[in-house]
Each structure stands twice: as C-alpha cells, then as structure tokens.
Image (cartoon, rainbow, N blue to C red):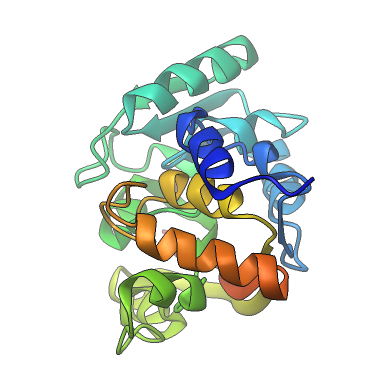
Length: 254
C-alpha cells in the first residue's frame, strides 16, 4: 500500500539527523559514489602518518571506519550533537575531538600535523591548513563541487544563477591552494547520479544537509513538498546529480 504524504513527511521530520550517517535512507534514496574511494584512500594515508587532523569530522563516522589511525589523531567539529557522537566513536580509538567554530584560526600550533584530511567541509580555510601542516605535509579532502543536487535545490528555491561557479568550483580550490603556498598533487571532479524514491527521503536529506535549502522546515515548504510527492507518485524517483571533488595538496618541504 502506498504511504500517504502526511505519514512519510511526519516520519522523516521526527527522526534524528545527528551525525553524518545516511543509513536511514537505505532503499529510499540512492547516491552514486565517486570512483576514487575516499575513505579507503584516506585510510591509506592515515596509516603512514605520525600526526593527523580531521577537520569538520561530523559525527566521526568516516574517520572511525579507517582501520589504522596514527599515533596522534585529532578531529574538529562545531555542532554539539555531532561532537558528542564523534567523541563516543573516536575516543576509544585514541583520537581527541576538539570543539571548533569552523572559523580561523584552527586551535592548533603551526606545523602540528603531517596530514590534514576533511570530507565535505562546509568551508575551507587554505591559509590555516597551510599553517598547521608541517613542511612536506599533505592535505587530502573530498569536497562538494558546484551545483550539487541543483535540480533538487531549484525545485524548492527556484533558479539559482551562478550555482555552477562560486566558492565550490575547482578553479577556486586551485586558486586557494596556490595562494596559500601549497603544491597541487591532484584535483579531480566527478558528477554522479542521485535519486529520491519518496518524499520522506527528501525531507530527511534537507534536514540533514542544511546548506542545500537554508532554513528548511516542513512547515515552510509543505506546498513544494506536496508537489514533489505528487510528482514522485506519478513519475517515479526524483533524480538529480551530485558534484564531488578530490583535492590533494602538499606543503613544500623546508
């Protein structure tokens, strides 16, 4: 039996969105993964590091899934519910989790780390990354590219001129690295398939990924949510595309 709009929306609006685990969407939404396998590649680099920092760790889920952490492992996070989750996951692994406002300066000394990683940072402060890296150290990150889930965003907010450029464009990342004195090792981009199979999946995603539709609430967007529900019911899953970048840079050796 097809579930009603009100039932799907109420369920998704009530479930916790703490942390960075999307398993609630299993069977309800699909997002193709980038070919480079970020967590595996990050784990390979962490295994050979001596001191590493994970910036904006979320609930710590990605870092906690790495087989081997370096002798000194730190992580930052700004949102209190995520801080609690990350602490519970990472402290048993010997990692320290530090509350940080995601604004410069990072709460660490100059040249503190030989590896800095970050998955889907909301903001990237290149000068700070360069400051906390040791000479010869590496920054390794998977980031959201320009126009990610643009069709979904425009369904709720209308046309978004310039969405395919802006701060998330690879050219901006390239410029930021160079301006901070970092050497670019690799900068790759991929566009990937996404689909939402029911309106509850859309509600959950927009509640969790808060920068997609800023200020999103069910009450504020109920009419658009109902319109999307009717579209999914009549035509099948709502499809869009995600954009991802793989960024690797190195601080020149002294």
